Image (cartoon, rainbow, N blue to C red; front, side, top):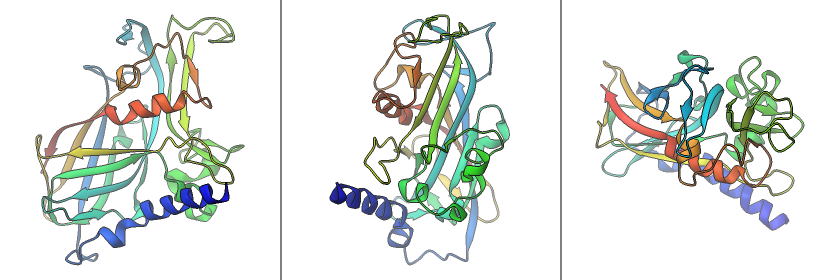
Length: 278
C-alpha cells in the first residue's frame, strides 16, 4: 500500500508541477496578457434556469427534472500553440468555482504569454497535490473554512478532508419516496462527486482532465492590447446522457459509492467550445 500511495503522490506532483517543465524558454513570465475562459451553463439546448418546475428538463430516458444547485471546480488551466509548446497557468492563480446561481462566476480570468493558442485544457475538480497541501496554501475558493470557497458553498467534506469537485441537485417526479430515493417525499436527487485518489489510504480518483481543440471554432489570439475570451458551453444534460447514460430513478443520490466514477466519466463531455472572442 505504501508503494501505491507513493505512486499516487508522485503522479500528483508531476501533474501539478509541470509548469516549469512545459513552459518554453521563449516565454517571458514578466510579459503576460489577459485571457478569460467562459463557462456558460446550459441544459440540452436551453439556458440553465434554476428551480424551473413549470417547464422541466427531460433527459434521454424521458425523465423530467429541475435543477436547484449546480457548482463545480475548474483548475490547472493550460494552453497550447500549434507548434506543440504549452503554457501552464501559475497554480496559485488557477482555481475557480463555477456557481450556477451566480453568472458572474462563469468567467475564469488568467494571465498567459502573448500568442496564438489552438488548445485548452483544465481539470474538473481539485488536484491531489493541492488537496493535501497545508490550509494556508488553500485560500480563496479553496478555503475549507468557507465550505470550499464561497460562504455556504458546501464544496468541502470536512469529516473526509476532501473537496466536492462537482455538485448537482434538483427534483424529479421519478425519485421514489423510500430509502432508495428521497424518504422526505420531496423528490430530490443529489450528485456530489469527489475523491482524488486518497491521502492516507487509496480511494477512487474522480479527477478529470478536459482537452479542448480551439481550431474549429476559433483560436485564442492573446495580446496585451485586446481581451481574448474562450466561450465554452457546459451542457449539464450530459451528466445523464453522456458517455455512460443512466436514469435518475435508478441512481437518485450518489456521493460515496463506486457509481461516482460513472458520473465523473460523463463530466468531460459537458464542455463544448462554441467560439472565441478576440
